Image (cartoon, rainbow, N blue to C red; front, side):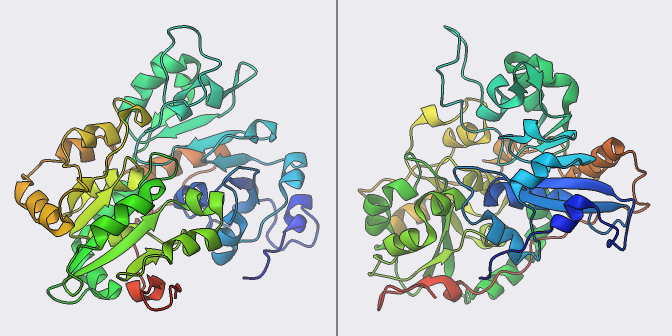
Length: 414
């Protein structure tokens, strides 16, 4: 892939621009995951001739591959250092590292399925002070006592309750808009059969999707002991297996290293979706989802799949998060029993509505994210909204699983 170009011309607002007098909106993408969430917002603006979008990649420990991901969408970026010197009308961000240095109001969009992970660095907490979820804590929202975002967009009313305890200074800027992933999965559910055909799932075959977040408590961290003994016991002809790994795993270890580790699976083929892939369609298409405490497992409660959890420490989950709620009702895998047997048992055990309360905890406003966010953004820009409702497209048809097959023969990824 070629190196993305920069757009210094837009920063300087030179006389060579054809469309002038636009509101200038800076989109700050720290990581691939953040960029994927922000795409749900900036696509609401990009057709408006009154708005000029400018993109930058802010420094982040998991920032590797972010510029390339944007470039794959046809987006060029301006250097972070130049963005810091320029003036904008609004900033869109999913993370807050460094954005306090920008000279514009910031709209921070929450990402992930609720606020799963409590604050990990507790060195600044007072004795007895509870560990709030990281992105609800003053450490992430305040800079030198000042609230950084002009607007905070959350998925669920529960976030406001937690914010009132952890950082009440932020409440005036907070609003609930729902979750775009919830809306797209619900829009895509009627297309399940089409997604299965696109993935190459044949009649009579079953699809097992294995999801992993990042970090030492994730499925991927236990891949060496977990997947070989579990996935190796599935009847090969009747099952297809797809692995969805959090982009932070690739960013932290490098794409080639992750592919190398996965190429050691030589007893059967496993489709490994790349970090930039749209994961929503495979979730909708799945018969079973095996996952950890990450967001994708929680989003699986919106589908028809049977869920099974990999063992994980509860201290990695905020008590009221969708992940914690799911851990109380979903069956947990055991390495001592054949996987096929556990899949059958979990499917037989599943009750109608078993995960409904978990799914309801993902969004307080299903179907309304794009409309509410667009209203908030245009209000901050001082512009009237377009005179049509935003279109919420279902997930696009995915490429065939075989495109990312890690094969038993040569260990290469195609």
